[in-house]
Image (cartoon, rainbow, N blue to C red; front, side, top):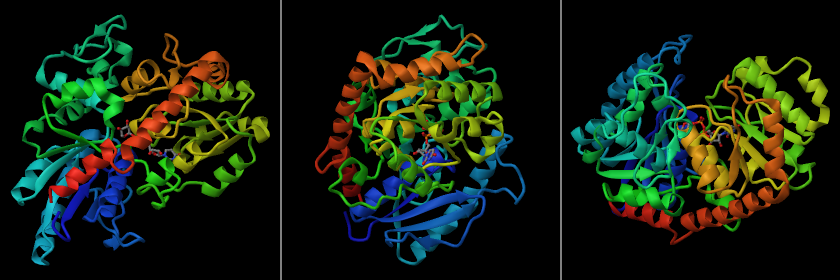
Length: 452
Ligand code: UDX
């Protein structure tokens, strides 16, 4: 690496993307690279330096006026974000060059593949960053190549799909937009387009680690040289001897840190069910009711994240009824929570960040996948890594309260629970090994740094 080598990192503006990519910035900065993190924001501020001075954050507008609702039309959203980035990024790069601080690469989110052309036209290397695992990217690749056809109507649930190096998948295990392609054609196009120019990309990065996806990875590596640099969890959570700053990337939400941790501190080890569905999942009112009743009926302590936009769906009187048994917060410090000894299991939507955080911290999981990559992540969590179970929905799509109670019991006690805990411990160690000095992910990061 040349002294002062400089790299730009640009995540898609969603928490599940900003979190791992900003954490990647921190890792690179700790290895001596100079970093600019470009954040697409609805309220951009002037550029600033992170507290430890290691990263320059450069907020740019998302192309929406104040008061406009960005998520109503995904195509419109993607188009405005693209236009806005194309208006701001070239000037930013030119200004950097003029000041003698020539960036050498653009690390960009896989959902914005057109950024590769932008990088190349300004003489930068293009490094694509996949926030989802290879097991999902590989499936999208087969769709892109036409070696797996998406049916024009909704999948028949008895359909089985076979991919090289994969266990057999049922329709229920496939990324959701493949099964519902007719309802979400635009989203299907966006996820498959991630692969549109993959053969021209200079560097491929993924938030995973070699051991975790060993089989699929062999197949992936027969196509491209890839660098697996995950799990993107601050190293101090993985190895208590390390002092890397605790803060986890950049958050679009305000976590109730003290409230959560003080409440957890008063609980016995392995006694609390932690429930969180990430930054995007929206549950129907009847599903919220089943979940709430299920949690209550477990008779166990639970910490439940219900985002501000979802709070209206909490059943009336529920908070009074549960009393001391449950704490509901609008956003938690998830890593601190998962690392807390009182946590007995994690009821999760199986978003890739949540999954890799749970895995790295050795927390048994109950998967309640919602959409995108989550069903496939859940399948591997249950059947390949064997660190949890997946809830079963009824024919009407609802997961009933009895099922929640049953699955929480299964994971928190009994023989199966013990087996799951043992496997979870095993994966925790493997994740720690990957990011420790000389581990597979650490070496991949070193390799990336040495390219500049
Ligand atoms: C989405 C997809 O689900 C995911 O699979 C994809 O790869 C990236 O975008 P999201 O649905 O928000 O992300 O879930 P997840 O990937 O789990 O990311 C959520 C992040 O928010 C996690 O890093 C989690 O630690 C954090 N979080 C969540 C909190 O810090 N506090 C909370 O209360 C809830």
